[in-house]
Length: 94
Image (cartoon, rainbow, N blue to C red; front, side, top):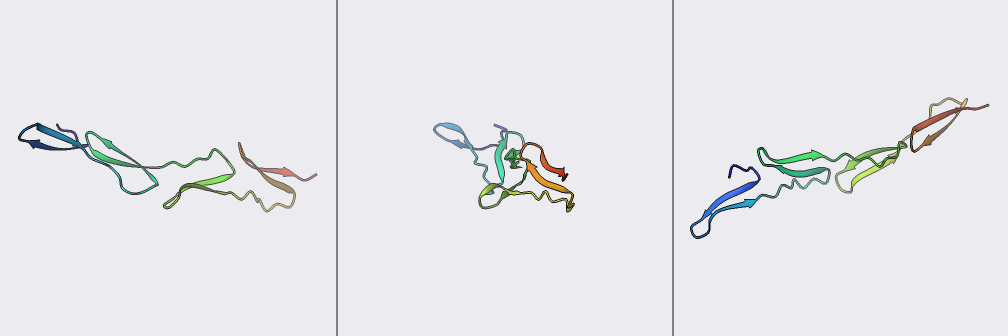
């Protein structure tokens, strides 16, 4: 059937059989799919928790995860905080 997502065979009684292949690379950090022209496709998972105060990544065991970022500008004249919408904020100490 010229579909890279099927394994084709012929049964003498029922005729052509097009069995769908399963694309699974076993990697929790990829989205697995099949392209009918090229076959299995494994695209990197994009992890984003929507919080500008975290560094988002994909862990091979637990999947998407995040760690807090450091907003320390090493300037004693600012108070360093993080706004989840915009990221690091450095406010001048008055």
